[in-house]
Image 1 (cartoon, rainbow, N blue to C red):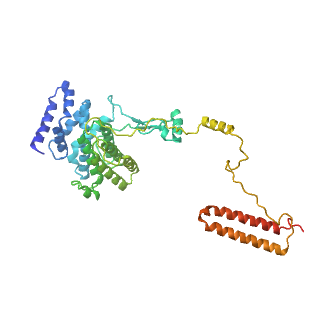
Image 2: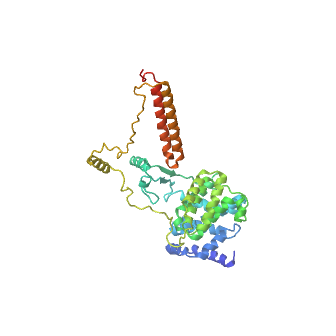
Image 3: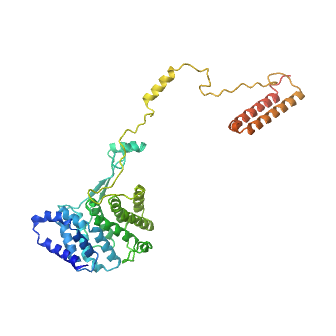
Length: 419
């Protein structure tokens, strides 16, 4: 850390101590424009052995509990870097060098789980119903499912998910570590629209490092420092994906896409279903090319809104069209005699001689069967040689076989031959 950067941090520490309470709002408004101060604070946090780390963490906590919204967001922007430093130090089993960072994380957690009166917060989330339109879908495009969801919504069967109350924590242990860190990332994601670009870049970088440290992909990413694996929970990875999803559409396409691949890689190794589901859903919704989003101005997630025009086709079958079709059919003249217009196949009458009562001799009987067999074989050959009539050949063969069977039954049947 350079001397100039150290001087910027020391000036910031002394300035806030002598600041009167009335000028706190103006101070908070001007603080976010000090880019040199922000970069210097990042370097202090990244050096666990720095002598300025403890006073910096203490002042960041004072900002958070001051009640000023701008100061609270100023502290939140360093939260991803603070989480990474704590996990990296915990993985190296050098817990004593992360005491001030752990105290800051615990302080922010204990402040967030209670309201202004000191009562425990219970966060609730109502799962949106598919029967009601949103920026993501329209009920008419879903089909029959919308009818079922609509019927359920009318009975007030909407599902509400609750989170909390969360217990107070005095120290971070291996048992409650990711419970606290997951809740802190949830608070960070709630203020994503106010986070500067440097904070989103830090989020993407620490997500990649947490997921690949200690695995073969670490050599591919060329990450140095921590070489041991950092354990993660499924809920913590889902919260990481929430921030990555926002960063994808707000100017950090390359870093966020790399982090998304690393989170998917770690989720596959850990066999976590929830992160895999969220990560694959994000990948399926991504555009083919990089998003060209401005880093300035309002931040948001870009969504394609479907048109609001009528989805009912002009040729749709309705009760009026059925009545109109029925009236037109009654108005047409009776053409029942013309069977070809109605699409009815007319089978010609087959006249079979020597069956209706004339007596045949033994020679005539053999000659008649021989002629029929010859005609049958000739018909089969003519049908098979003409490729244009190949599709009509099989019905013709069946008809000739049926004629042959009728003649055999008629000749051999004693009841139909007269003597």
